[in-house]
Length: 432
Image (cartoon, rainbow, N blue to C red; front, side, top):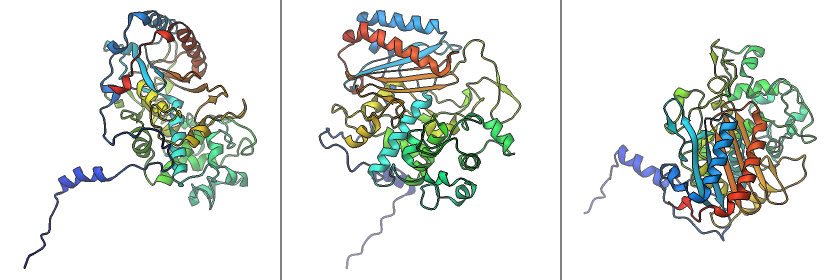
């Protein structure tokens, strides 16, 4: 008589096997006309790129224009990526990633991208909608809302807050304003006002802000709100059952071919191995540390809780990988999108100048899309042009212009395109 043998798999082997069977959440409604990519985890794009791959005599004049621009604004370093029809033509660093160490900027360095993070968060919401886990028309608070925790419900005194929808958060129309300061950048005031023991976690911050009156009735106006995108980050966590960063990495970024994007931390000592050093503009004063320690710190290192921004502004990555992400949500056929064509159209639909697009700052009927981001020590611009070119630049230095600086970078893009677009190399650095 034969016996069945019991096979015992050691824990170490299980740790190797389990990731192979734990597939990421995927979209059941993606476009079928796009080529299927092999389910193989490739190397990180940032590990393969060097400045030498985008150094050509034909574009030397463009390099000179960019270097002059950085010198004019006293910017230590910047990274540029140029994509056309989902092919990465150009990826190059300028100036210093870390001036003190003499470390030159390379296209593989990662930088805080500030509010460009909102484009990533919006994509996560659209993916959850495709899976039937979230609807843009879902309410956020109350017994039938996604964030239906009793602590939030108890903090709400205005009935209109129960009418806030996911789409209103995405479009900055939920009623939240910065009349008492931006909740994501006024941690010190919130600690004092609500007599907290220290910086609030996300749940505590939401309860505090929900106790304040709205600035307008949800849906009747718009006011840019970082807090609204924190709520969207928490909605992603609630609907997916996992933490925000893990969900986005495994279901949005990795499928898009982006393997070196992370939520940034607050201090230079906490930076990722390939992350740059950040600098404030000349004349910038020291600030009180966000946690009321009494220390005076650089605005880019400790004045605000960057990591707590989550999906509102905490992502860091390279412009090259960010271009790969944009290629995965632009509706073009060359790179397979991670969301459906319907979701792409919803994110880029134009209504009027008074209506924010989903994740993007602005999308024009012509097909020109814009996403900006600004933090202490960082300025980021993603500009997608109607002819299929996408230019992305992120700096590691602030300017006194603050958020207004991106207008000058946009002007730089247009001048460079006019002179050098036709001279860009016929290559695809994504394919390395």
